[in-house]
Image: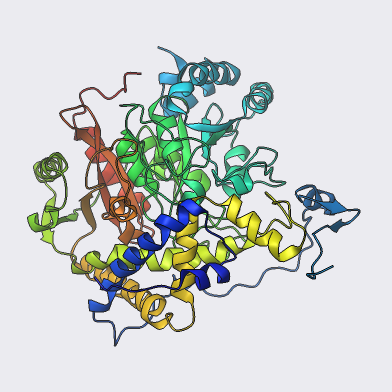
Amino acid sequence: MINMKIDLEHISRLANLELTEEEKKILPGQIEKIIGWVGQLASLKTDEEEKYTPIDFSLRLDEDEIEKSLSQEEVLAMAPEKDGDFLKVPKVLQGK
Amino acid sequence: MKLIEFGLVEILSLVRKGEVRVVEIVEDYIARIEQEDQKIKAYLTYAFDKALARAREIDSKKEKGKLAGAIIAIKDNIVTKGIRTTCASRILENFIPPYNATVIDRLEAEDAIIIGKTNLDEFAMGSSTENSAFFPTRNPWDTERVPGGSSGGSAAAVAALEAVAALGSDTGGSVRQPAAFCGVVGLKPTYGRVSRYGLIAYASSLDQIGPLARSVEDCALVTSVIAGFDRKDSTSSPLPVPDYLAELKTSLPKIRVGALEESSLNGVSQEVASNYRAILRLLEELGIEIQRMTFPSWEYALPCYYVIAPSEASSNLARYDGVRYGFRAESRELSEMYLKTRTQGFGSEVKRRILLGTFALSSGYYEAYYARAAKARQVITREFAAAFDRVDFILTPTTPEPAFKLGEKQDPISMYLQDYFTVAANLAGIPGISIPSGFTADGLPLGVQLLGRAFSESELFRLAFLLEKNINLKNNKSEI
């Protein structure tokens, strides 16, 4: 198993996640252990190998038929906050 | 005999003959759930009122669909119009979808009734249903033990007679492992066989929806209804769907079954290994040729999966940002809202996998992790192709051990090892079915898995059906 130090702070920033105090205690160790464990892939000879691609279905063109999709009301009904016909979010720019 | 005790094929025939009304069946299941589910906790949401209303409609119809009388439970990562769909996550706790998944439309078009939404590991990430943000589900055979996962609620509901059949989803073993733990039949169809439109995405190159049922016949019938091309899922296959139930009656041609070498059973519990040997002997007695095989690349299947699946999850779960649907955390500005929403909305296992995937895809590590795993996946797929040149099916235990106790597996990797036998089929896109194969001395169910070539579901069902008829299960009703 390869022991690797991971910059979890950087990774969580990329993933838009923060860790709780409890998670800060256990997650870094666990994640390093898991990354060490998946590191055994390095011992499988794959240099000559192609990357896997899921089953190849031939491309198909849809008929240009008009179908009903979800209405604006239905979509907006799911939103945590809305304003008229718009989704509402907190202000985008930081500062006052 | 109570109506809940009839299997799917039997109860449908009673409805067809006019001997039972659908509303009576629904009422019996509701009574059963009200009596048992406080203990089992298979369901996150009940849909009793809708189910009763629908039953009355179906009873008044002259021409009924082929699933009239089927009372079905749905894993709560499959969207149901007007019925809360949570994925067992705080982030979707109050989410009511405005549309149905294709599989739901197909079931309802044949007059099946949705009785409720079942518990799972949050976002289908886990093997015990303990990762649900709400509560764990219990195994009906021993309520101190887990039902498996991630489709644990669906498997427990079927085993506890709280539904006649259920839908689950299988990304690394999430239908087959709980099926084995709960003593029911579970199929992971070929990648592309069943539309995933409306299945909340976890790892899109691996996810498949599959049925859980009390028998191979019931499982075959549900599969033939939900399978088939769907223009809303670009990965769904245009191949025609056979009538799997009718084809069960046709005999299998001369077949060969691949079996694991003894050395491959080193890591499994003694009772699982001896049950596996017994099933192999049974196959031989049935005149089926057995060929011993090794699968050296399987050692790499789980590490491969734990790069691919988290990578895809980190991308798929980026959509939960508190803007369009789901939970939103109170914040003064937008970027803080994203961060707080995701931090408070996701549980630890989900965070663990998002972080793992983000790492594997991040600059400087992509080649060493993601690219290498994608190549390992190709090696695994080719190894299957070579095996299927020599044999028609492969038989393995479904799980390395029977159902474990709640709280027993604290280390993530020991939980991940649950999927040792199941995960390779997801990586290669081939179908696999788990059927009950016996019991431990303590009375816990055991299962074996049959794997076949892509789109060989019909043959897979026929061999499973043959085995099911010949496996002697002494006490095949859980006493609850």
